[in-house]
Figure 1 (tube, helix red, strand yellow):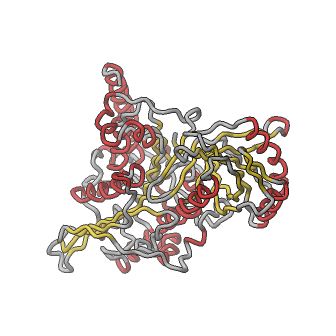
Figure 2 (figure 1 turned 120 degrees about the horizontal axis):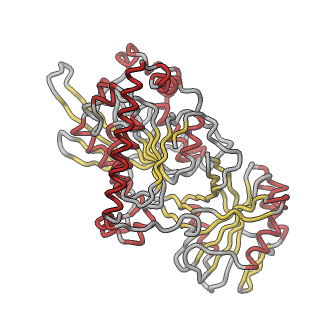
Figure 3 (figure 1 turned 90 degrees about the horizontal axis):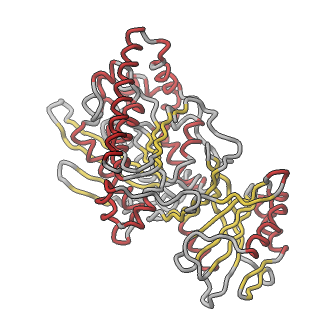
Length: 528
């Protein structure tokens, strides 16, 4: 699926989910999981985060019951006064209301009991009238601390009915996800995945491969990451880039040929082709988006994914993703590589690559010195596309140097794999938590001394990005028209190409189609 326009967002996406920080989840667990084994109940508030196809409830504040507002008697009930109090507080903050309760003996995704349904449905209309947002119901299973969620939406003829969520995510050093198996079934495991499954176990693999990933930026690092995620068995992979393969890319884009540059193929075309050829999932969904993350449609697309891997090299797109990690509770795995050469051009002084995960609770890209917020305005104005501006201002070791950097600090193929490895290691730590440990914080590798450093980066007390934590839809977006993306799409517009080049593209497309059919036939023969 390729989207070219910014109108991809729907007014009421059918898919739903819920997300919260580890801090919020800890406060909820402390109240809902009682030592006496009884159920308990409480309320919280949320902000909606609306993508192109998914709505997510971002839990913001826990409102524990005051004396007389709830009773525990095996089951638990709340008073109407409690609901009115929290709904009024939510409305004043443009928030919605979440009703949460526990099933102490439950395990995994929880269905609603009759009393659960009666309680939530009885308050759904009231909450919507006060806040303008649907009530969100959530259940905590006591045995394995799994969460489930549903949005109480208006149905046919104005009836209230639950829209069940596909997952619930808890953001911390380890990204924890609970799945609704009825909506997102456990993927089958073909023999081609045997080594991956053995690395972290069948249960973890079933969880990992269901977690959707969006790769933003498909240069040398992003392309390598894309292929390896597809080979790991990720069942839903999104690819986003608007750039075109050029002659100067051929020494870094492994898998690109001279014909790709001559035929004006996009980096998206190359990444999609290689991802499909290397995918090990039985029914992989590989969505492609010919968009910039800086465009409204690009950002709306990112909100549909469980995590984002940032492989861009400019201030504006990185600032958009930096803000998204806090505002919309989507962890962003980011990094960069910079090559430092001697001033006289006599050789390499050093090369440095970094990797880190950005989410509430960790310092943002600006706090760790990986994003110059002052350069965002210059990027938005198009100044960074001006060679004279770049020559006068860009430095090889500038903190904004992304995986593919600028022409002055260009990445090279033999080192790009190291940057990709750093990002993928952070991805595994965040999602698999080897040894029970999650992502390690910001890392930096110095090639000259072969030293891996844990960067002691602290969150700034007045970080402007963290003030947007959990604000969702109403908050600043930083998106807009992106002339560079529009120019690249026009450059590849087939209607503006010479007839001979269009015919050559048709031949190349037919050859790619034939190879895809051959691979599909081979998979059937191997029972994959």
